[in-house]
Length: 257
Image 1 (cartoon, one colour):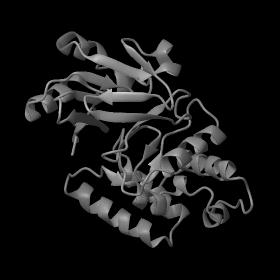
Image 2 (image 1 turned 45 degrees about the horizontal axis):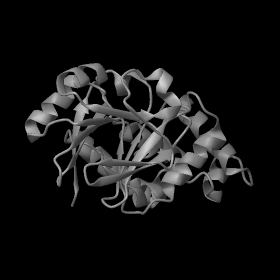
Image 3 (image 1 turned 60 degrees about the vertical axis):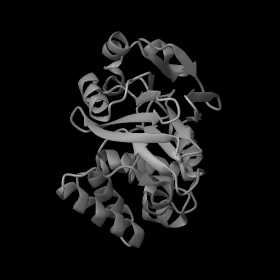
Image 4 (image 1 turned 30 degrees about the horizontal axis):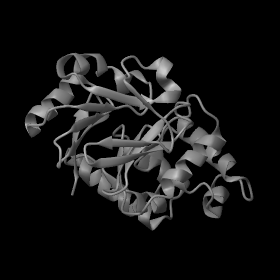
């Protein structure tokens, strides 16, 4: 295995990730939510930070950049479409362009909607997918800047990846996402099983990530907006999938459960 991923908590509910290329020792922080949390994780692992890969411009994903650049002299890579919103970027990337961390190759995938230039990073050889706030376990990000159709298309790009892909998302929202998903899709046995697992993990103080994409395809309603059953549950039989997705996202925004 070329890539090792360390998972840790940052801020209140952010996840932090260190991606470590074992062949070269290069180590990337995926986003920079909190410099101290990243430094602590590095110390625990005995790794030295060489890179930061940014998914989008929101403060809780970038505010550690300046301190980490000062202390480690790292190279910061981020979305070309959001270069004017993120201070400290050294390398700009866009969808379909290659990116290397030592011997590990990453693919850049467009996932607009949460922010217009949001990107995900995919290690195809190791099946590691860093989704930022585009896709969560049993959920997806709020649609702050985009429109439903491009955001749905971005989620379909992620859904097309292999079932064994491990999803590393930006926040610990899984329990709340499970409650909404069950309200939409209460008879889904895969969802019920996953929700039970999530409750057990959270009660034990454990993380719910990474999740596997195959499980998400079966249980996450936001990846199933083209499923007639989900359309029917939203009162939108025969509607375009992006319209069903829009209704799902609006329903989650307003959900009180």
